[in-house]
Image (cartoon, rainbow, N blue to C red):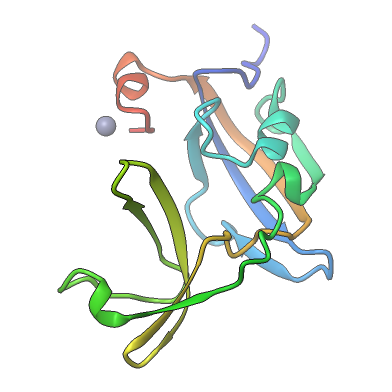
Length: 157
Ligand code: ZN
């Protein structure tokens, strides 16, 4: 039987290392549990998702993803300072966290915390990796059909 190939509604388990243009490791699953995602739900950046299509277990992929196909270009708006009080009580606000805020029209906007400085929090509408060319090194650990329940929930069990 041919190995299952990565396609929509497949659960893909993979190890990844992400480097920037300078070759520095930004993020890696090495030494940790591999990442498991349902392919096609947008959990991976578009450039990586496209490159994974049709691969199967045991394959290795090195792919360079442009900002456009990654976390987007920088908007150039830069960070904005808001008071710590603007966040709900009991929520720990840390660098790198992201929040969804709904405006009066019900539009949801995501922002990232780029710095916490005492009572002041710097927030940014750009993803921390916006503007970066992403160099992914991927090893496919497993590919299988998602269960109806997983598809229903939109995540891997
Ligand atoms: Zn679930």
